[in-house]
Amino acid sequence: MDQDEALTTVDNIVTQFNTYEDFLDSQITTLDLYYLEDEGLARQLVELGYRGTGEVVKREDFEARKAAIEIARLAERTQKKTLTSAGKDLHDNFLKALAVREEDNRSGKVSSVIFIRDKNSHGQEVSGYIDYAHRLKTEDFEVYFSGKKRLLPRPTDMSFYNWDSHIAVWNSTPNYQVIADNPEGLLFKYKRDRKILNVDPKAQPGENSTRSPILTELYTQAVIFDHVSRRKT
Image 1 (cartoon, rainbow, N blue to C red):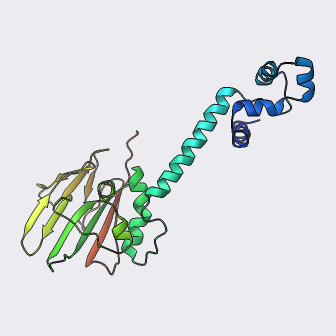
Image 2: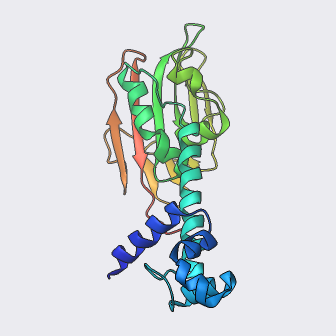
Image 3: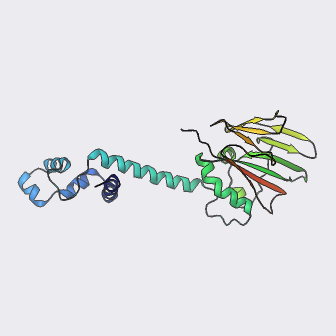
């Protein structure tokens, strides 16, 4: 039996029995109890492989797999709960793009930077870059995915510019360091692997990064930059 088959066998046993003792009891025959006259001894013999009607599974293997399966089950249930885009009927390409990236940004597999240019509630044109993963952790995106509000850059985001008042603000986040004094334009350094993200549309976005313009009816302009960290954790 190879490793995959052995793991499948253990998984089948783990899902079938609540405890290791239940599994041992299933391997004990009436004849075993008749001759041994001791259920505890019969269990020990099954555990050692001297008695039993099926596969020999060690206690530590059973309990380790039981714990691993339970952790995976809880993680999946928690992840489903935390995905605010789940179950939403999304029509606009921008919201669909955010939904596709939500799980990976929450887990840290991908770090997305969102550029938005549009008018705010006062009719002023604003633009800026948003650290999607950071916003997901600090804000409930239910209002955006449900269409109750539009996601817009704020003065607290990575960058914010009001084209009417000419107010410009830059802020580093837990994920990115802002490099605002670069003569060629704004740069973001991803803190996890120290790679540079270049948001200049005429330049390459950088190593392990992609630039995706989004055709949307919600904004004048929307672009999403995706960075995949190669640093080992």
